[in-house]
Image (cartoon, rainbow, N blue to C red; front, top):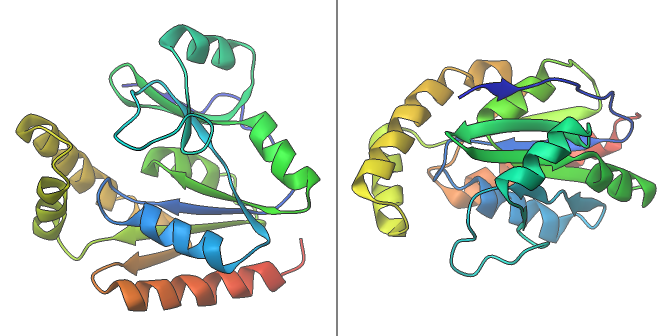
Length: 200
């Protein structure tokens, strides 16, 4: 699909980005960070995909139609967006960032690798990017199979994509291998602690 990096606005507050191939545990680590640091606020992304079991509109994602998403793009209401799979869009609303920054909080993103890469390209010091990886694609396959939410074909598609996404790891500030969750959590804590103390 095409990547949509059109109008990237300049950043005003701080942003922490967790990014990873699907199934590497980034959401678990993002939730851990949110529970530890009250100054972080989760940036809810907009997506055209259907909700998964247990997901709530406005909490996990803003679930929108293709048409709604296309008008968000046309009206320049997105900070960044990606067509992650064909006709499946994800994006960050500018209004979501403004809401978080107006409360003097730090926006925490849990987003796709290409979307994160686009923001990383801005080379701004008030953005911390953390790439979470599993030690191997085999581990990733086991996790995706265990999740039972994807068809065999979808798992193959995700693994192919994860292989491509691993190529991006070198562009991010930090890469954490999440094979031992307790260690990964500690590393996340140290990185965020340090980043929060840095002047804007």
